[in-house]
Image 1 (cartoon, rainbow, N blue to C red):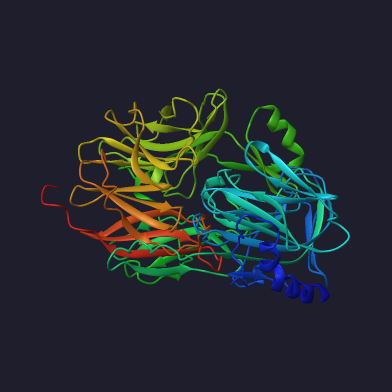
Image 2 (spheres, helix red, strand yellow):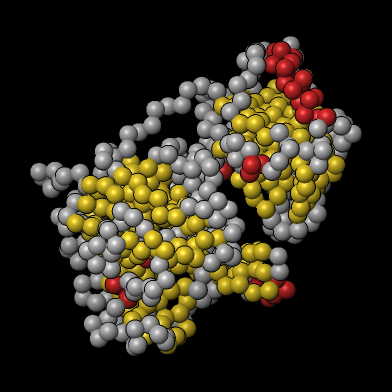
Length: 577
């Protein structure tokens, strides 16, 4: 490829040119950059080392040509975008730089053909338009640089450090943004991106290469819990394995089922699922084709099975979009020709061990959305009361909040009750774990969304799920959670940790879940990809007194989301406990 040779030549002089461009302080420092990741445009970004994550929407295409990777976004419908993301562990105080050698064909909107940088605290991007480039700053401010972006390739360099951002084109400084790098990073992301990241844009551009480097030494990782032993349960390139369940059948036998999706999507379950079993207390796992075991919370004393849940995402042909949007419901694209909406909940009962089910729709107030979480959100209390935490938005809500489906008659009737909401309507509450403590209280551990949230919130019911205390922060940053009551009376919370160093963490409570020891967190995993925030949803069981197995899904630098688990031992209870 002729443009690959030009890339090498330009790279050799970039640092020198940047220093001579008139900036008060040359940034990045003069001299050749030691690149952490290099994509050359002669293959797909997923084949590069390190690999990139593909975000592929509808009505887009790409193709490899002699000049590089051509990305075409031909629609302004929702969900039409095609871009790539790579983690880079940028540290604000040390700075980072990303370069792209790009030729624009056309672009009509912000982020339609772009180069992006974020460092976990702040972010910005360059958007290319015919006749100029635009740098995006705080408060929707845009700074333009007039230039010919379409007749040839140009090398665009975007450098960030603390609150400063600088942009070069072919070695010439075109924007000195000292003090201008202040837009908060969305969900704390720490990554580089390129391609088309806007549904509103119609765009086409060719990428001959993108490369990046983060400077400085990474801070030391917090030590993992002593003796923690990881086990790989399922991992397959090209498969997005996610959302495992966990059922302990007997002392030695564990069962899990999980999604094996062909797309990295929480909505589109194309690809189906898999079931695995362990007959040695979670040490080794094998595919399983027998009958799936029933979770204990579903079993009544008379042998009947009951539960209640929100429908979650309900797929319909895309031609029905207007019908559901007119009702005020939440609607999302799933794949070409298919959308999904959120509405409704139901209860079901089986009197033949799950072979057949009787189903009833639950009467609910008008709502825009309603979702179910995993088995962490179910609880069968000591007196037989059944609870299931769900979340969503009533029509009058400005943020998601949590509710509980409650039955006090073994699943014959169900009540839809409020659980927790932010009084100001600013912080979204959603996936909620439930657990009864040894006092008969029900503890709810609630996910709250960053940037306003991020800390797990706590609410407690003293009347078996009818009313709940005002939610308070626990001091535990991360989400979502799982709660179990331990043999010694302590309560264990395991949860995903989605900021550096990303992984799986745990915390203990010695007072029935009222307070949590945030000063002595247990680090089960600290080796996830830095922007592999797609991880977690842990479920834990106490295999024997003091011995825990925790299952979860996980994404590392190879970008293969997989199912794994960790065997570990509880720290001893303090004498006062």
